[in-house]
Amino acid sequence: MIKIFHLTFILLSISSFVGRVYLAEKRPEMLEQKWIKIGPHVINSLLLLTGFTLVFQGSWFSAEYGWIIAKLIALVAYVGLGIVAIKSQGELRWKAFAGALACFVYIAVVAATKNAFIFF
Image (cartoon, rainbow, N blue to C red; front, top):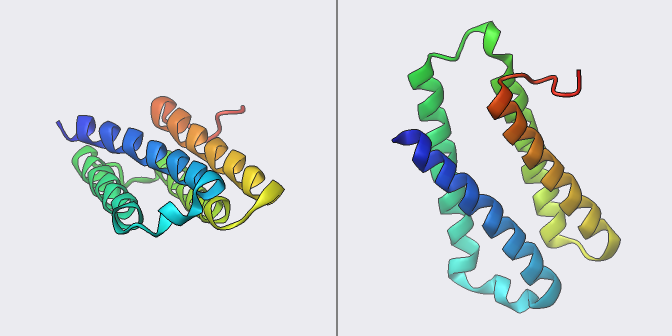
């Protein structure tokens, strides 16, 4: 059941990110609305909570589960690039957006394959 919640929060998280980048480009004044500011933080907090719950349930703290560390590092990159994508303008916005989406895809592939080295 936790996995279903986790997958749901993943979809909500990426949808809210893409939506906020769109709003930043087309209607930046809407980003000032309280629910648009708070909503993604609630979604992402629940996403992390369900992710950590899955880690604890799976007892994935040993060294053989290095793929989880890779996902966390990619998550930090995703968040950083996402902040740049929402707060910047022009070409930088789109480069950061593409980088954030690449991090998201990497996280998804690592989660599915349990292999941090997806290119080898």
